[in-house]
Image (tube, rainbow, N blue to C red; front, side, top):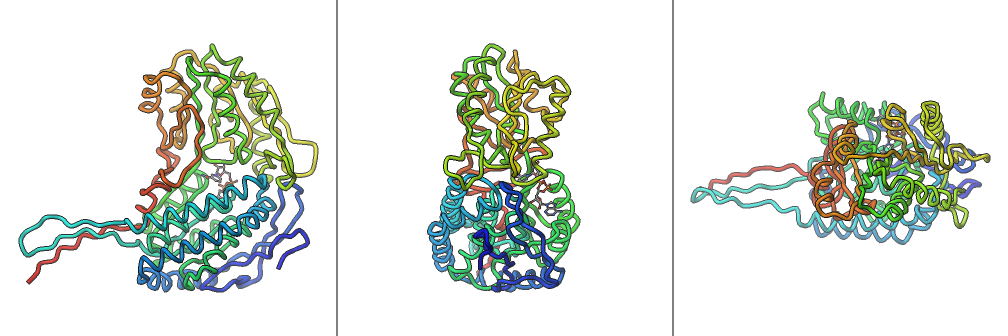
Length: 481
Ligand code: NAD
């Protein structure tokens, strides 16, 4: 069933059934490109959550007892459905999140590959046999941790939920996942692929609701064995504390404020073009988005001129319109936040080199923005912008630039541009980040781990490390009598 806008009716998925939720209470879903209400998301009651937990407990027993060959085949079938439905999933994503259609469908296609990668990697989740006394077999086994409570935001409406779902299911866990109430139809379309691939009822449950109530309920339940969250640092700290109170491990993928160090020997034009492409991807609403540009003083004018040119070449519009390269901000909160960060910087002496304002049309559109002369005490230099803002500041000494880069409590992504191997090594050693890209602004890949240090969280997603959080290690010592 779809609405007038071609937007599907949204349901939760509990115990193998698509359902509306106990009280029938809903929240509106807004298209950020038009500000029109395009649908309604059902909100779970405590009873709905209990049903989901009970289903996950039962689903876990079924799933862990399913052979790895059968599990892998089912996960590959789900990946094939995601690939086949990428265009459809992408359209729904653009309607509710705003990103350009090419980004949305690209995200769906990459998502299918992530799932295939995790499903195959789980086949190699080997334990080990340890030399021991004669007559004793000493082994180490890796077992699924159990039902997972997962919480994901709205910036990658299919990639975000799937990172958690694909790793958890590949490891043999079941899940109750609360996807964003702002991008629920994309999450539901993803879950439908798993359901249509034959996943047993209860293994994967999708809920929406009042975020704080849902997380408190799911984390406190004895059914939940792991808390997996992607989102902001304050909410991450809250959920990690709730998990700690009931002695549950957690996986925390939180925010960042990624520094870009453009060293004196870099090519300023190339660095500006590569950094600008990453900056305006998903309108800057990416946890690894480059967001503080520290440029050697000898290059700053060339770098800024090329960056402004790249910003002005961005085509801002409705993600469904052909040719759009940057959509609106995903919600009104982000629009207000980038307006506030811009006006605060300007009030403290920053110069707007391009952009700096909301577009004069309906929708949460904000122009790609480049600021210079930004003082260190501007909020933009310490608060994650999560929007299309690029503050560019000069540096003279690389050690000082490294100290500035590391001064914030965040430590997710960092970027460096240099043609010197020695400088590249200095940046690799010196930057406090879980993800470092040199001479480009690389996105995440399923083969390699992503995650943060310091306030940006702990645990890794992607790479063989992705399964670690979802597996527990058991030592078995067997005396053969
Ligand atoms: P927010 O902190 O209100 O929410 C972030 C996400 O957490 C949302 O999906 C929200 O539904 C969820 N959430 C909020 N409170 C929760 C709770 N008590 N329990 C469970 N989930 C909860 O921020 P926002 O306005 O949606 O997003 C803006 C900020 O969030 C950004 O500045 C950025 O730092 C951060 N963010 C980070 C990522 C990431 O990939 N790390 C993604 C989206 C947002």
